[in-house]
Image (tube, rainbow, N blue to C red; front, side):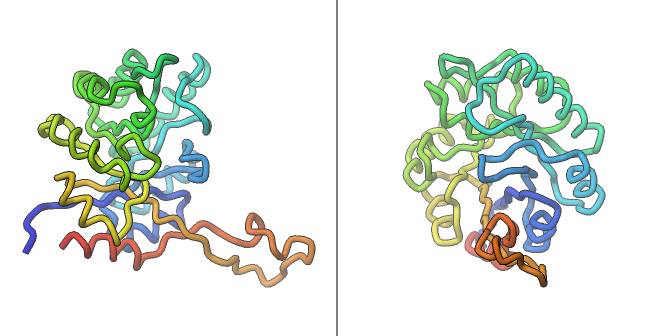
Length: 245
């Protein structure tokens, strides 16, 4: 029997998908809005209700918009405000990622966010995959107190970036958690665990389900936006965990 304690983090997009992920046995939730854009800060009400309803570890993403990870002064103020709200609501941590124009980690403002939410945990998200020098960035994030790095090995899919993820995990040497994400599925999670040595994994398991609306307007009957809702399969979350037993 495998004695390694694996942790499965599921990215969710609203209250309903969070409930499904928790029911499926997720160990931690990365709570987002707009997963199609890579995830943006969820509404205050969603964070509050999820915190009240679920005992699972809850890490909202702090990202004021989609697009790149180069933020203006005004955008950073929004991030700081939302980060402090998450702390006030009793979240377990936040997920952030800020870069400078030259592709280096925005050390100053990342450190300010970490300090603002202490002692909450902080995950640096896949902005890491867009940085110029990953091993230098690794050391910098350790230096300023990040808890973990979510990475796909600087490739769109972690399956293609698995070698870099393994190298990063070795270089981290238990000073920071390296968490593979982007394309993690039950079909490959065991391989990723074996090749990288990582023990935490991130997956969105994004799915869609038909609306329960009885009336479908004829002009929009084929509109996914109108009549398809975000979903997370309880069974898929369980299947992901089962592969690591």
